Amino acid sequence: MYEIAHASQGPQFLHLRVVTRSFFSNLLESAAKIRMQSNKTFGSALDMAKVQKLVNPEVAEVLRRIEVVRHNHLGHGGKTPFSLAPDEIDFVYVSCILGARLFLRLTLS
Image (cartoon, rainbow, N blue to C red; front, side, top):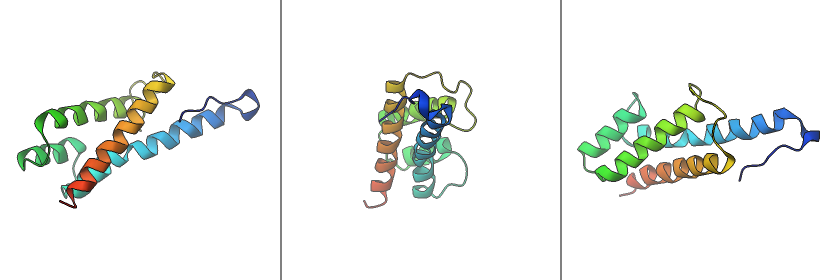
């Protein structure tokens, strides 16, 4: 899922791959905010889901921690961009997609 740029492709190839991951990792926040009809933050949408007992508290805590890692390493306000190993990026990326799927499936319940 994560490709290391070949020298002939230049550094912009690697940057494009990370930006693409960052874009799709925003799905978690967007799906939560849409489902919970919140225009605030992912945290507020997640809190609303917990209060309405739509998400198990332990699952909510996992989602909150994934969102913190996503924001700090892949998000536009990242504190420590490019400090995760490729497999760690994949883990966060896939976790965000599965979290978004969880919120989107809540809309079907």
